[in-house]
Image (tube, rainbow, N blue to C red; front, side, top):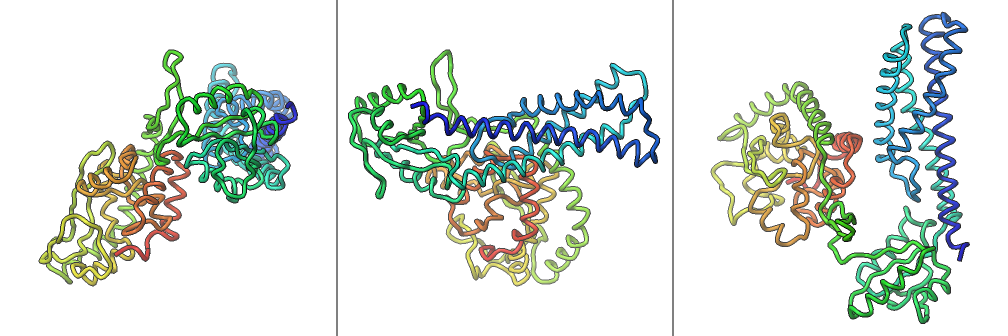
Length: 466
C-alpha cells in the first residue's frame, strides 16, 4: 500500500525542490544583477568594496524574503497542472511585498543613503526572473507528466452521470499522462474500462492499484451510498473525491465548516474590495485612454449616422449589470427608428430589415459598442466582463439555465471571455455562460489584459455579429 502513495509524494517533493531552487537562484540573480547595473553601469564603476560587502550581506534578506512571500502566496503548493495566470498574479504580489519590505527595512534600520533605484531594479528583475524560472519549471513538470513519470491510477466508483464527463476529461490533452482510469467498481457505467468484482471498496482499490478514487452515485439507495462513504473514509492512503450532484455552472464551490458541521457552499466566489479596486482603477484609466484615442472616430461615426438615417446618434437600452442593477447602455444607433422591434425581446438576426447599411458595418466591426467607454467611466460597466442582457431576457434565461444569475456577481463588460472565444450574438447561450463563469472564477488583472489583447486580435469582427 505504501507504494501507492509514493507517486504523489515523489512528484510533490520534486516540484517543491525544483521551485525552491529556481526561486532562490532567480532572486539572487536579480539582486546582484540589479546591484551591478546600479553601481557599475549607471554610476560608471563607482561601486566600492564596502558597498559590495554590504549588498552581498543583504542578499540573504532578499533570498529569505522572496521564499517567505512565495510561500505565503501559496506558490509552493503541490499541483499537477500549474495555471500560469494564478502563478503570475501571485508573483506580482511577491514583488510588491519585496518592494515594501526593503523600503521599510532601509528606512528604519539604516541611516546611510540607500539606492532607491536598486530597490526598483531588484523588484522588477525579481518578478521577471521568477516568472521565467516558473515557466521553465512548469515546462519540465509538464514534460515529465506527459511522459507518464508521475501517472496516478484512478478507480471510478458508482454510476453517476458526472463520471462519464470526468472520464472524458482525463483523456484531454491537459490531463493525459497525469491521470489514468484503470478500473470501475459498483457501477460499470463507462465502456472500455475494466469492471472490478470485489467485496469492499478497499479490496477494489487493492486490485486496481488505484491512487485516486472518484465516487458518484445516481440510483443506489441511501443505505448503499452511506456504506460506500464509510468505506471511503477508510482509504487513508488514497485521494478520494465525491462528485456532487450540482450544475457545473455553479461558481466557486467550496467545502467549509460551521462549528464542525461540513457545509458545501455553491456560490461563494465574489470579488473582494481589493480586487474591485484594482479592476475599477484599470477601468477608469483604460476608458479615459480609449475615449481620448477614439474621439476622432466618435465624431466621424456621429456625422455619418446623421447623414445616412433619421434619428438620434446614440441608442440607449436598459440592460442588467452587477447585482441585477439596471442601467442604460450606450451604443451608436444602427437601426431605423420607423421600424420598431416586433415580437418582444430577442437577439438581432442576420439580414434584419431594421438595420441600416451603416449600422450593418458598425455592428460587424463592433464600432457601435465604443460609446460604452462612457458607461465604463461612469461605473455602470467594466471594460471586461459578461456582456449585459435586457431585463426580460435575463428573467427568461434565469429560469432556463441553472446558475445564470451568477454572472451578475461582476459588472457587465464591453468585451468578455465568451466574446473573444466566438460566443456572441445568436450562439450557444450555455457555452457563453460557461465562459462567463470561468472568467469570474479565474479573474486576475492579467486575465483582463489578455482579453483586451484578444479583443483587438479577433474580437472586433465576428461572423455572429448582426
